[in-house]
Length: 346
Image (cartoon, rainbow, N blue to C red; front, side):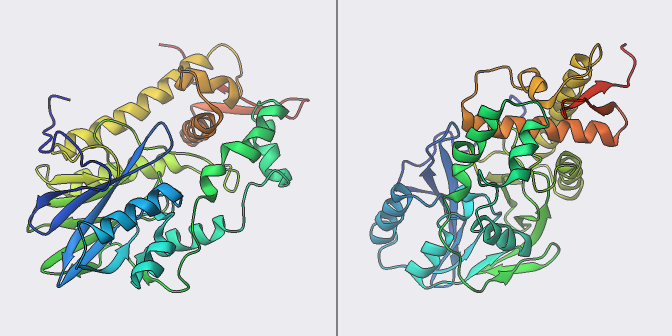
């Protein structure tokens, strides 16, 4: 990490805020997971504050929002809420906060519709297609059952959204107070994820697309089993690198703000290329299921929540390699899909 600069070595404590620059505040909310926080930003907007992302919908998050609204922001008003993408740690409390503060929601159309779809309880244990998605890729029935009952509980931590929203589109300009932001959208981690770039101040709100010390999760889900989110993610990383200056201050959805955007984009591409190499090496001698490939990509011990993301991300690498003709797929008499490398060992 020597190529990076971290201007703020310590994050704000829960319920407190740090001034990034005049008119930009940084708030952090806790998450009950291995990744135990989400970053929230407030942008001065005339006589109030525009909020960027909202946090998970749980009692702790709402308590902290109440503490902020009646503490550091007492006497101030919120003007609007921008949500970067549909994952519950970012959009979960959006509906509650919009109603609490009486403010409109701004997000991409895909994020709004994807979040609305979560309210339909996709991937319930009764969904045969969901269950078979895991069985057909080599998990036991017990694990498939757990994925339906426990592994995706995270997806249900979302308050009902407002009935209306303002759509944010890539290439548009959004004026917030005295600042002008160019809207970028990216894919792979989440479809049509919203990012904001302020050229005048050299600020890039990267959401979960670019984070300094972790690679954002890139997953294939049962609703699009043959999708190529990793291809979308890598394309977005290269587009960000090629269209933004290297010296911007990156304000990510998790971990610390940093400088070193181009190096990080290059590292993310190399990181996923290495994971594909590991899969190719493991599947060189015999066909392997996605379930068997999970520990190749994620060698640490995983709980059921972590396994769900690891399984889906491993499949994302497999699907990318299938697109590049680096793996061949076969289905056995047991109905289980297996993959074998088509690339000669070096």
